[in-house]
Amino acid sequence: MAISNEEVNLFINTVKNASSYNFSNYSERSFARRLDKILKDNQIDVYSLISKIRRDNIFLEKIVKDITVNTTELFRDPKTWHIIRYRVLSKLKNQRTINIWHAGCSTGQEVYSMLVLLKEMNLFDKANVFASDINSDVLELAKKGSYKYRFNINYLENFDSVIKTNPYNFEEYKEVSFAKYFIVDKQNDTIKVKDLLKNKVLFRKHDLVNGNNIFYTKFDLILCRNVLIYFNHKLQNQVFENFHKYLFPNGSLILGIHESMLGAASAKYNKRGLVYIKKS
Image (cartoon, rainbow, N blue to C red):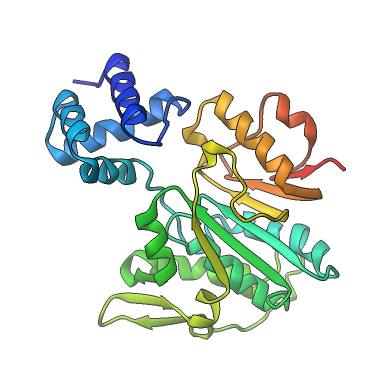
């Protein structure tokens, strides 16, 4: 039987009263799906779950982490990376520094994809790369930069598409080995990010809902992909307003391919395909 809206709201209010986490403005449908999965995985009903999180803070943290896990992959959606490479980063190459924030970075594959791209564009040394997520467990995985080979091998084609070829000039081709940046161990089923990339990024725990800029700097580029689909329109607009404050004039915001900006905040950006540019 599907979980009811009343049960979802009871769970949300219980978590809110017992912790600093507030899921009140998350999309009801997507949150209900995630909560339903939690109930099935733990073989428990919603009232037993609520009773347990009220008396067990460690269990509460575990449930919150399970709810906030987002999937990611190396060079996800290559067309987006083509835009980042040829329409966004190429315009920043003459700057002295480039500040990039991955908001909602999950296990870090997107971050390391960016670092590979920066290295191949000779922008690595001038870039400051920041990454954050609400989930401390996935942040630890991101810092380690070690992934299952069998779950990521299919994304090597994405690497080839983004790093080796230019969709705007089919005659341009650059031979770059995946092994330049990753250590592949098929026997132990691992792909490990090399220290050159891991040592470049600053990871921090951060909840997009609270609106604080924990990095105390402004950004030329913010990526927040496939995160805001879990928020309702009110919360999305709040986050867009915050991103607007944190971007330099003419700074770029990139969302997931199935996400878009609606509401009052959209008037503060110029939309150029997948890129939202802060109005100067």
